[in-house]
Length: 341
Length: 190
Image 1 (cartoon, rainbow over the protein chains, first blue to last red):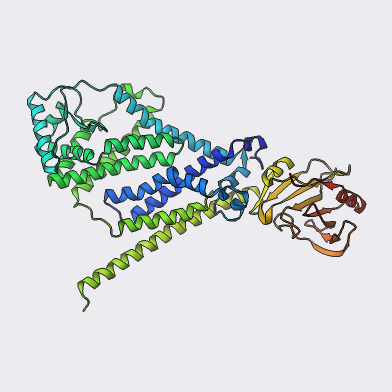
Image 2: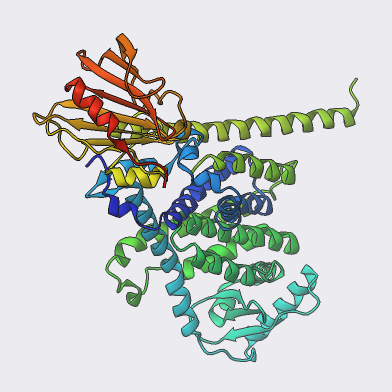
């Protein structure tokens, strides 16, 4: 290590570096604070969790630009040296291989963020390219799926059920899609796999996603992730939001069908029939795919397990003062992060 | 007996207070963690809070948005460029340049404050106990002192005002050369 980074390194456009560094660090702090509050306040209802997590998610997109534009004084040396409780730039005083540690840290975090973003973007683009052919639901399984969809739509208060895309071939899958023209996609294998109650629960789950406009929200989140590609905390938070959306759809479906156990059972069956199996050979072409596949599979299995456990318990209760908690937490975070530069 | 409604209000108030207490603990813990993290580079780098070591006089000028006053006369008995350049944004900004003698020992410090005629921040130029003080021929308010330096030896110290700044020249060289250096200091705001 050397005592001082060379001057040429500091000639990098410091404003952008400061913005990127603060976006990454602020998101990490906001995410840690929010996650601690979710656990200590015992917030179990997905909607309330989402409201709190949105604080951390909105921070680098909304609050940080406001801080940069409205309070340029935070960028001055006098503020950094005198009033800030943490100044990332101070780490630039310590150099490694001629570059300040702050620049190293922002670079490493940026690469991590990009890797996390691409891990979700690449499979998404591949999946869009390879949609399997669909057929009108003329088979008995197709008619059964359509009838269940109509029945569950009526039970959930949806007047016009979304179109059903029935796949005669392929693995057991059941999902919703379409931001502007929503539809429910189900395969023959999924209909054969699930019994009546499980199919009703799974259909209600997908309808709940459409009711919540989750496909459109997920695209909006993907756009935000593209803006914050360098921010690993942001990438992880959006994944947490996706899990919250799944939990919220589970609760809505369980309330609509009145059978929490059937939904949990259907979830497990579909997971075991697809994700629980070893990954097919073509997905192991990347050099690190084999080593990454195991922890990712474990995380998914853990998530499915948590959702099933949650469904086997009674519906969670909302914590009191939900909105007030979000407002006070937002104000407190603003106060704390104002002094983190 | 307490009415059920009153109990509900009491429970709600208690829950609200508990939520606030948890929020206070979480944010207080985060603030403490951040403050602790902020001291690590200070510990690694060995400079007090508020003082930064920079690579050159030019970088100090860039950080302070002002030109550093330098002596036109520089004796051959010291090494140029300065061995260390330290800046602080406190009290309107200040800079100190430390020079080594030809044998490599610290022998000269030129410090200046941009924030007027007040004393320089002690973090940048540690206070030295004066043994003797008299006026110096460098204008009104200028002084010449003999002080005990950080190394325990006697140093000469000139303090004067030039270009609206407080300057201190502390050195172990000859007094005549120090006065000549002080008189040759020039520069000023950009």
